[in-house]
Image (cartoon, rainbow, N blue to C red; front, side):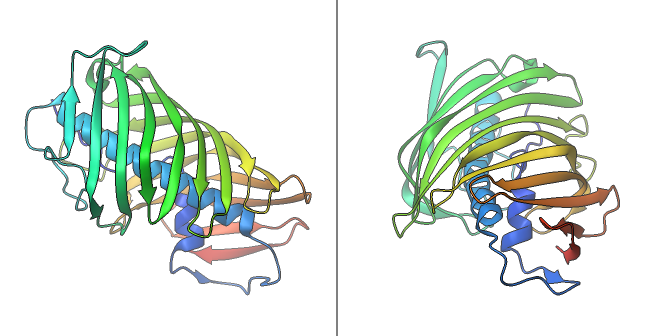
Length: 285
């Protein structure tokens, strides 16, 4: 049965919402501070999450013979550009599918795609034994070249919740040939699945960490120190707003640490940014 998995890839999209949205400061930000670590990690996470979202939608097609349901945003993934190879064993996987963006596509979140995404997988999410490995073939997102791979393993499944471990080892090459490397381990719990057509009761709980290098070659990292929670009841046009949790960003080369605190559960669109010197200010998403 097809389940509502729209935006299941929101495991860290909230960072991009913060640094690339039209949010307004409630207190004056220190414009001299270098926010490249947060921005580039957020952008990299968002790029890979876009791929995860596409894979989720392709798996909807694989799990169910019905038309792919996408009620929140126009999708770039349809039966027309997903080719299934259900009995083609590759390594530890029993099947694979190909998402072909040979016809360039831009979805409702304004992400432009070209190239191919290859997904090697076994099992199904609805039976709790799903696992996959994703690789890229000349794949570009908004002109940036995305390379590397990801591995997802489902760790639990009930009628109402799916849990996953997600590992990403990737590289983003920008349109100006700057290189960002990115490695992440995430744990994602997605609940509210028993009400198939009701997105407002969906809940995402995300934990994990990431590390890599920014475009300047600095060693950088991030850690979710308090689980980040995203509620469907805080649904916005193309994304959901985080309502609680805390994330720490570090530029280990420059010894800079900053934290993002999303609060304690209130759907108020506010986040507190805590700087290296202990000062803080509010940001409205």
